[in-house]
Image (cartoon, rainbow, N blue to C red; front, side, top):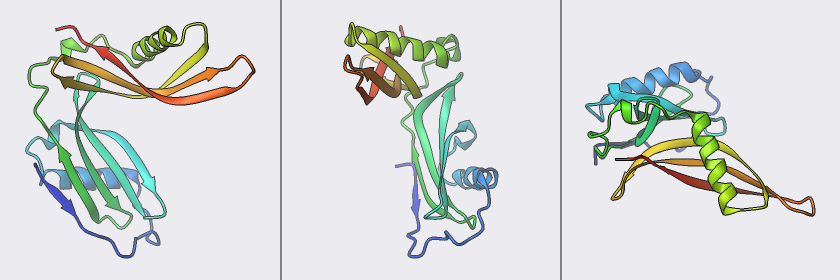
Length: 173
């Protein structure tokens, strides 16, 4: 455990004036240094705002080249600028991979790859794939990029089925 901070909220600050995402990111980044020695290696991956709770959910992640890893830090910032929660997930898995190993990987290439793979799985069907995000991961077999998105399958009778899908793009050693 690298660090964890959580202050329970009995009454959300939804009635506070929102500080805005830019200010929330600055506050989150400044607070993150208390929980990891490598805070400067993180980039903003995702920001979500929950108006009902009056808070911003900010996900930072380490990047190699232009690809986010699954080493993340989540910081929840209240509308009034207070910190609700911080969690850091570092496992040191990416010390032996270089930017050159992922330099040719682009979002368009990954979305095309995932679409082609799903067409192999659903031959003869009218399928389309819309990528939502992708993350560099590592397991016992090596490095891979997990591609996440929504697969749409058009049925012969005109019906449509949407499912969430993960596609794995393995990196060569």
